[in-house]
Amino acid sequence: MDYVISITNKCNLSCRYCYEKKLNTTLGNIDEKTSEDIIKFISSRNDAKYIYLFGGEPLLYKDLIKKFVTSLRAHMFIVTTNGMLLDEEFIKWSMENNVRINLSHDGEDCSDRGIDVNELNSRLAILLRYQPKTLVQLVYTEKTLDKLYDNIIYLKKLGVIRFSLAMDSGLTPEDPDSFSDKLREQWKKISDIDDIIVLELRDKKKLVKTGENSKCEICKKKMYINWDGKIYPCVQFQNLSDFLCGDVVNGLDTARTEEAYPEYPSLSTRCTDCEIARYCRNSCACIKMSTTGTLTDISEASCLLEQVLILTVLEKIQTEKI
Image 1 (cartoon, helix red, strand yellow):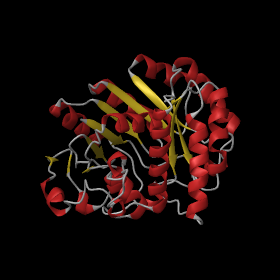
Image 2: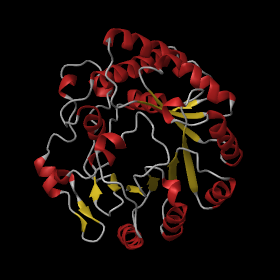
Image 3: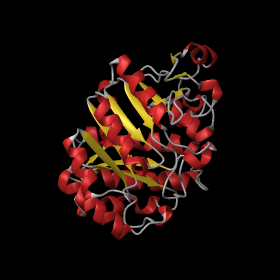
């Protein structure tokens, strides 16, 4: 089981594309009692593979991170941070305690995050010294799509070799055809970059080659523990009472949600009769919910992105370049 623990949904930045702003949730952070309850809950299950320490910005509460890491057993702990509160002491501690740090970075222009890119780069440089394979997570919008390839090259020159490229979940293209062409151009160029790993291309290649598209199930492989101790399937469902799957005091109970939402693991309705639907990840409930607010459909932009990723990988497989 993978556990996502929301240390807090507070943040020291105010990114224009932040998903938390769309959730209209109450701001808060884990208190001492809830932290103890979370530790007891996860320890009693004895099945933790990856434990993600998440936010908001989790480094606002470094002591809580250290408490969870030293109190729980897992294959690995992963902290996702915007990087502005990183310091060498915490990075060293993380490397000594089986904690991998994922860093958010938008490339040469970080104006959508309201930060000085040079300051972020200085923290990235320290992180790369200790963790050369740092995963950099980049969010792109319709405005920044034209620079996606350039931003990967920019970050590669800084020493980054592992990337995850996420499209703004709220993106609604003004001209879908033009947007699709731009996506195709950018991802094709990115797929030709040597000596880097892009998770979206790597994972899509594996899916295309094996045909093993994992089913999205409620709290079967992953669960999201909110800062108040309540349990949901994933981050997009936080504070939605219909998707409450228990809490860390009383335990996990998914029966009501599973019965109420049988469409949870299904492909989007727009995928019907699509020739490449078997390679599509748009059955992911989190993607459906984050892009359309439903469990039955995904956005036009997400559909176009999946098409582009699949076609890019199929072409690369044919030419044996990926």
